[in-house]
Length: 202
Image 1 (tube, rainbow, N blue to C red):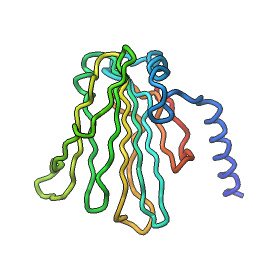
Image 2 (cartoon, rainbow, N blue to C red):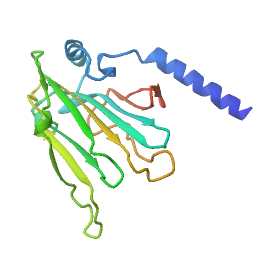
Image 3 (cartoon, rainbow, N blue to C red):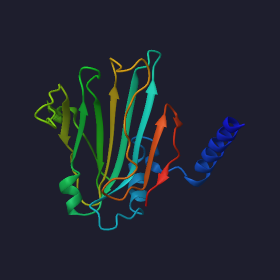
């Protein structure tokens, strides 16, 4: 009975999530820029430099247990400090068990024009060591974002693929619901199905 009760509770939770959290323009990657820009203008940033519209991680697993992690981040730049601190994109990875990540990004300017990240702008450097006693082959892939300004919306999709799983199947990782700025919606997903319902943070 406890297992049945837990299953019913999860079904109710997902049903409520579907009802309470309506679809938004940025739910699917690289959707209509005009719709995203208009909807983003209605999400308050308070006094922060940016407001995060969507912070999402989605995991998929193949038959060998290798994971593919897709991070989808969308935010609106509210004031000049947001331009200063949120105008780059980067991805950290470990070559010994991951392929080089792919980065796609675009900036939707306040006037509606779209500036896409050119893959040739990406640079690869060794990751800074967190401790003098720890050595690793970790790398960072990063680039400046084109055309970031006050009122613009930035969207980025970073995909990580494991090629040498650390465990027989599955993956370990962390996801923080919340950042140092307002977060409108955050969620974690598995394949095409949500693991956790969207969380409204504002």
